[in-house]
Length: 119
Image (cartoon, rainbow, N blue to C red):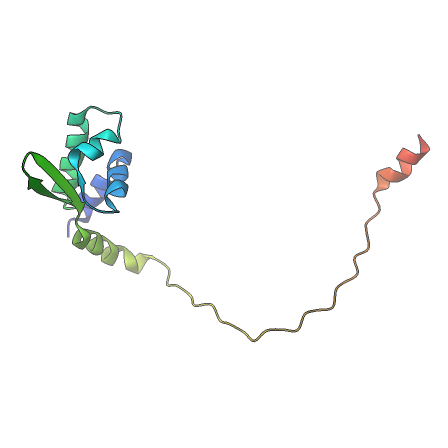
């Protein structure tokens, strides 16, 4: 496992944004470039880092390059992280309780009300 490479690749905010863009499916590089204010070579470098870490895969169609997430790599990351995460606790459903009788609330007296009436 190359957890170090994955961690390094995910350590950059721009690369995490690219991952978020790809979570809904395949995108051409041009669609990814449009989402950033950086120059295309900068985004290309980010995409290369993600590809080298194995987080994204490419598919060429003519002159277009399409990017998708490599789910297997995310599963590897998940498998590595799982022992460190707390186990989910299932909520225990109890039988419905009877409603408690409404408690009588006694309004607290504001000590300043007493002084305001004197002035």
